[in-house]
Length: 504
Image 1: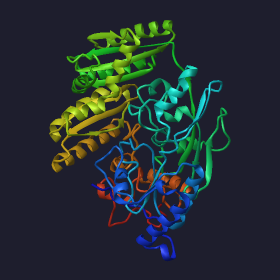
Image 2: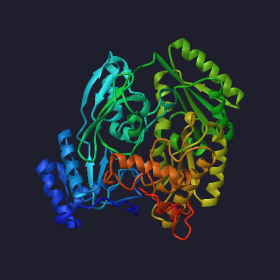
Image 3: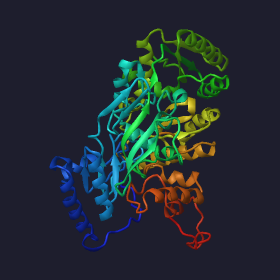
């Protein structure tokens, strides 16, 4: 299925106005900027770029560029701006929301060759890296200095820091150490016009507006990242994990809120329901309790004394919340084994179902149990199974709807199931995404959460950076027409209130 193309980009004048003329001019111009091996335009070469981790949405791009210098990136963007060619930046392609899905008459700008770690400074506890550096590679490079990079999405072995910046990625330790936005100090990027801009600073503060926070999580719609300065933190002396078992999913959900209410901020606080633990245990043999309706993984880190005290406090809270069994990791191997199960939940789902649809809603912690009960009812409503794994500490839910993509009816029901989950998250006071982004997947759900005025404000930010709307268009912000078609906006006689006002 292909996502609809909605954006109205500024068309070039003259000989390049036709699609074929634009394509010829683009390929000729790119050939002057890049070596032959760094420019892909034949179908057999561009098909691998037709989607990201959300494989249900596919589109073969017109061409793929693989620059390896910032100067090449600037030249490519200037060329595309001149010709009116849309550009989709791409990292490792692990996005789960279609954020890197190409446009038929557009260029995919791959940053895969930007994979150098430029510096690691143990004194300032920072690392300067290019956007194609893998998340885990940063921690590996910092390890000799007893430092590491805290955000650790489950795909950290493959996902890149540029993609993490675009999606504001988190991970199992984001509760205590924060998301990407809390661990990035400075970003160097290139606008659609080919201008290099620096966001943030290595100093405690930087002058002017805090545009770094605007750029992080913007899904490649504002600028193309070419360099990132990240914050490193010291490795804790000790870390231990509690596996807490519950005979009821709602008790497990409520226990999460109880732990935080007790003034405890664990290094990680994750939850899985019984179907999820069953799937994971077959895959990695993590040692999970398969009789429990839900398990919580609660990690404490710090000095041995701090860890011992926090483990004792958490155990008391969990027991009072209805926990039926507590197992504490006794060594580093067991701790890593507990976490390996949680981090391999997605591939484990692939072993028990032909396809799965991973959602990414966020809710207040106090409503975790309520959402899980609602999802159980949705399983009956849509006739599909769902396993639940999530960052319980910050309410970031990742339900996995299981279906067979070869059955068009099942795929349709899976989409409806997913939309129902996201709209329930909004109803409960949450949001439609936590760390996977909006991309093309959640455009309709954005119509539910945000008002027309809010969406106009989003388009205003987009227009300030990219007036021509050429940089990753059609992503993250729904148009008026889409929201009207989705039935989440009242349009009377084809007109909105105050039609005389300009619309982005």
